Amino acid sequence: MTAKNINSDKATDVVLIGAGIMSATLGVLLKELEPDISVQIFERLDVVAAESSDAWNNAGTGHSAFCELNYTPQLPDGSVETKKAVAIAESFEVSKQFWSFLVQNKIIDSPENFIKSIPHMSFVWGADNVAFLKKRYDKLQECDLFKGMDYSEDPAQLEKWMPLVMADRDPSEKVAATRMDLGTDVNFGSLTRKMFNHLQEMDHVNLHFAHEVRKLKQKDGLWEIKVKDETTGKKRIIKARFVFIGAGGGSLPLLEKSDIPEGKGFGGFPVSGQWLKCTNPAVIEKHNAKVYGKASVGAPPMSVPHLDTRMIDGKKALLFGPYAGFSTRFLKHGSLLDLPLSIKVNNIRPMIAAGLDNLPLTKYLIDQVRQSPEDRMAALREYLPTARMEDWELETAGQRVQVIKKHEEHGGILEFGTEVVTAADGSIAALLGASPGASTAVSIMLTLMERCFSDYVKTPKWQEKLKEMIPTYGKSLSNDPELTEKVRTETTAALKLKMA
Image 1 (cartoon, rainbow, N blue to C red):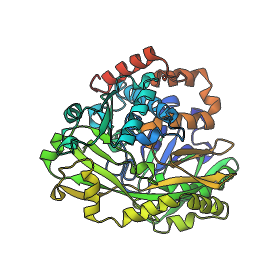
Image 2: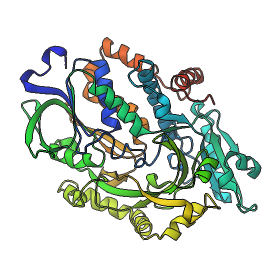
Image 3: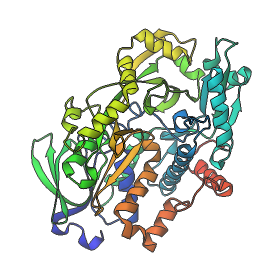
Image 4: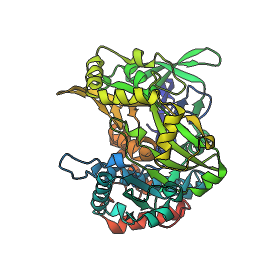
């Protein structure tokens, strides 16, 4: 992957399938590390970031584990597990470092267009949930990444933090909340577009819209990729040395077509979503936080309810949800045949086993699909007691495909996270899964490069550049208060965020 071999054998160095946040992140990282490599990007739609990276489709913005209770499960012995929360918090700091590098080096501009400071809060009611939240808070205080988090059970204090949530609430109800002022709102659609705008200005980079990848086959050390131009109907074969499948819910079918052994046994379980979107500017203006609660029993992580302040298309928005649903599509703009066509001989057992192990999830999704507008409003009023139906309208969210993978004991298990699948020779990689996804894209792509470009990553040239882009690369922030404070101070300034 050097300048001298670009376009030799008429092959491109890197093909990225899907024009979302993952491909954008990997493309920019690789071009910063090796400016002369050739990159071709194929997107089946006619715009960048139209699926999971779009602001309306993304189930969570700025996931940093400050407020998402599903990242800190309560164990059978009553203790709270925080390992996942710590890992996600650290990964988000890595993302902020990379974005800061892009801003400081004028690779992207106007960070205020894609990231803003917004308090992250967890809110619960009922004695058992309050006890859980206090345990969670106490446990998180053991990690320096969560210093600055406040906890309160005082209704007067909570009213100051989130007046709409506390308005007209039963004063006898036991409530509690945590607040982290360091939280952010990230518009990943805007960020993705900025990165692709930069990539398109670079030498040896081509972005093809309305192009669908139909087949992938490895031959003589290269990947032959059959691509169809949906505008003209013409098909052609592209040869590539490395392929990244970052097509969101469309990644699984393409991974199956690659026929690599490492991709055998994976299945997908699609989950759709909807938001209630506030249409009353007066209500929108009174709320300024991301307030997350506890998910219903059997609910997938993307369905953790939250009353969410966001900036979308330059305007302040207020969303509640998401409400889960079921569709056999793997993409919002996909086919109803996506799920049935993904079932193969090598993954049918894991998929059946995962289905049998997750009957409560199936029941939950059926109940969600059957919800009436009144049902959805009742759920909203648990977080916003004064909500009026005329102030809210339903908005369709994105499509997620949860990973199903082989398991020796259970046959198959349903994973609520992201999974990077790479071939043994490092020539192809696919990203499967959903949450926390976009927020940890940089860490995910660094892991991918360490697997697929291991020889390059070890070189002094790449090591120096990686540490320039991500100063804490190779270090841990979780128990280094001085480094954490230094990095947060620098990224807060670079990204024009508020000091906590």
